[in-house]
Length: 75
Image (cartoon, rainbow, N blue to C red):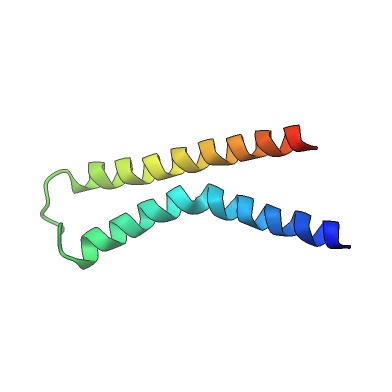
């Protein structure tokens, strides 16, 4: 029973670590808008937003892949 709880906890931590880059990208976009660093007239804002989101998603994919591969080698 303790092993099952520990396994579930590590699974939750793995997902949290994997999603951290994407959440950081989303927070970066929020922070840029909230602090009025850029507004709707900022040149190339759409391209920069897409780049930030794509970078966060790619980093999340890589982190999830590496953590899944690490988990597979542990069992």
